[in-house]
Length: 435
Image 1 (tube, rainbow, N blue to C red):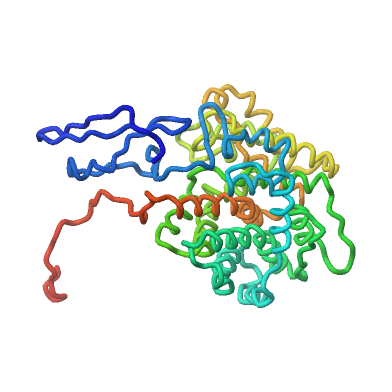
Image 2 (image 1 turned 180 degrees about the vertical axis):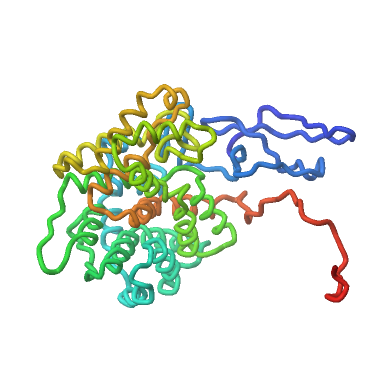
């Protein structure tokens, strides 16, 4: 580990003469951590941390979050600066390589990604194996996992060039996979990517276009999509990223690891949160019902939750939410959307909650999921596609974290411990002797 131990913690186990000295390690920024790797050898005990809320499972140089201050950094760069000045593919280069590219490097990188967006034609036939009403995330899990059956030339995880090629393929092909999942769902013809279009533009084209007429990508919507992708590109050791790392620690190929990440992202507490926001809005039904709904949220005996507000990590305003809030209003203005009951309801709920002392005191500010749900609905995406879009954006974070893990000499196969609370050893009884 790069962090040097300048201090230590000594733990003594009561009733014994055993003690353990744990080095305290420091990263380049953020809280210090106690290295507990010797605690079992010294004391014969494990640590217990459900959800790993206080446990660092790896060392990483990719993303830093300060939840109390509302800070998100990609390779040291504030998300606000990247959102204002950068593009999604430039952020992809940064996450994968650690530095912002020169103009020449960016052109070469963009060319590499945008020229690999096609899928093997036989993969197209995979879609016919799914029911027409299959959830796009189910389709993406299957298709991404199947990529390893087509690209045998890049499956040696110990070969840096194979890792690079696999990363290119995954980032390039994910928009095509997701857009085709939608087209299959709706019964429309699949649209092939266009090399003349940028990354976000290509996705919007494949998602919206039909062969019968020309489709021109709205530049404001393309920029909004690019921004959404930047904001979702990585987010430290969240559930899906941890899943990718855990899968990768076994030596599994990158396509299988990313498929595992997609499955993890599918959960409503993770990538499905923006879907849950729209469901909540539909349940509220009308602006006049907001006061009653918020009263239920405040009632400790109620199970009603205010979805899209607050965050597991951020105890301040989610920095991504501030950025996407403006983009949300820009998109609504560009599309001329007025009088949509659900969107009007969302904006009124935002206004009331931001001025309600109960939520302000508890730092329950709108998070990125609240606004992304609104903006994606305004752009015409069905709620079933919300999490699929998240997966497209997060692929670069997953593959960057996976590659970093493979190159980490201290990385071992993931193997969490447990507290066993089941029966102690007992003897088997034949069926006739069981009471």
